[in-house]
Length: 236
Image 1 (cartoon, one colour):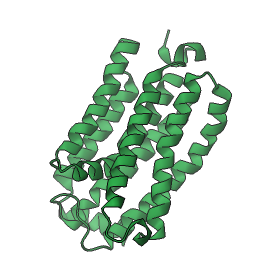
Image 2: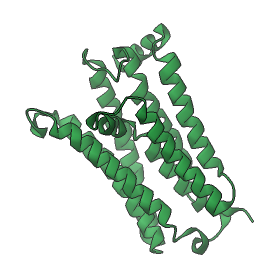
Image 3: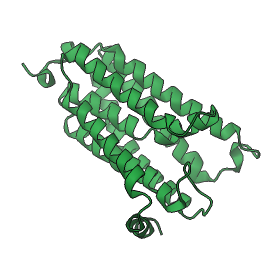
């Protein structure tokens, strides 16, 4: 029998998703917390857009963790009701994320690592695209619990890059530690698949593929003139 069509009694009660939800939330809090505390003028010096995006961003990870906890406790009706909030939250993530990227594009000093200004735009743009794909598939597969929970987790991992980058910068680690840590999260999920399902789940492999595609785009395409033209069209 396919694992995707098993009933709630087989798919509920998995502490892994609660634990990794807490881990991702801790990364977000630590990463953005370190960034905010380093501001000489304090958090009040940030524009309102930054506050709104930060609250929305953190809310996504809190919601994922709560949803995993409700499934763990067998509160499936609450889980489904609260799940409707994820539609609004995902839309808010995309809208606020786009305007954050646009603000960064109009800031001539914005750089990610050693990348040029235009190349740096590839990072958040691919993050938003991948988040949209994973969330959309998670919504489509909402009746298939095994796929749904993985896709929603993957959506979170794929949008984690800004928080992870700030955390790595705060501890003074090299820039290349960021993809290694993100790869580690995918390997945790793949390891859980093998332990729980005795196979790699297609959603986990898709998520890893999306992450690798974005990484290649950041490394190979971001500095190309064609990308600068695309970024100007998208963000001007």
